[in-house]
Image (cartoon, rainbow, N blue to C red; front, side):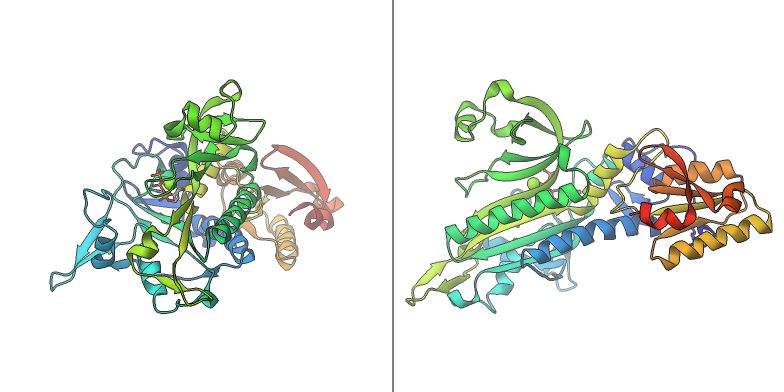
Length: 415
Ligand code: ATP
Ligand code: MG
């Protein structure tokens, strides 16, 4: 892509109505546009990052044997009344709307009820189980406070997975597989070293714990006690002697930290399946309950967390695997000959399927350097007088390191 084709522009100063670093940087760099508090649009650069994160999650989900769907955002109130989650006194973050005839609808904040209800058309016997379905879709929640940028949106992108198993044993096995695949996802996103499986409240209908995945950051809203050796944590909400004993955790090795919840996995027993009358018949023809699990990942929250934790004083720093482009290409001189040389490099990299932004604007080189840093593109390639020796200047954004390399070696360095 040529920068002259990109309609977004970088902004020098922080927007005055944003307090969080992630929102400030993402807006300044032109990745997102604020529509109102807690509501953001994803611009061309931001959309690429969001898609790259989704792709990593999708691959892991597909490897687990999960099937992707896209459910409706508009939901009938009746199924939520059955599970007693329609009343605003029970769930206080609903956005709701009405048809002309007065019929009330909910705007999806999660999808347990609709997925269970729809499976009634397809599941009857043990032969149709297990079922694992997921989607990557916008969710709507009327959050009280939305001041942390992408970390707490009123509209946000979530991956939600639902599992339906014949037995507790089958459920448990799958549940642990999901935990593994979540850990893979956070590692691929380079958050593995400071994202902890965190035991949390299992909810009213579960005897066991639920699992949260908490990324350590001062911007986090959750208090968690971390065991850095065992690589697990416990949410302060359930921190007591009994639970520590159950989890074989020792008070003296726990450190209190702030975490951002980037994922959550829940065992739901048969609460929703029973309530909505989804059962199966086993081999002997007996009617049995279906054990359900639900598993969320905050996709847009992850984008915010990554922006927040990796940023330095010059701007964003994206991990290679989700950066909107791999290379930011600059010509220091504006004369036709220099431009021609830069075109050569542009073609060379594009032909190798490397995503390049070519900054072809007629502005000072200093401005281009500043923008390359602000945008957080992993590699900056500068074409200057060394071109005659077939060399370009290569800067590694993360390490802030500059080297000169033969340009036919570029593709072996950039990943
Ligand atoms: P929180 O406690 O932060 O409000 P939650 O427990 O209500 O989150 P879940 O229903 O478990 O959230 O949703 C699954 C995932 O979606 C969360 O782990 C989080 O990463 C993400 N998420 C939840 N609410 C938001 C939001 N308002 N904005 C962005 N991401 C969110
Ligand atoms: Mg949660």
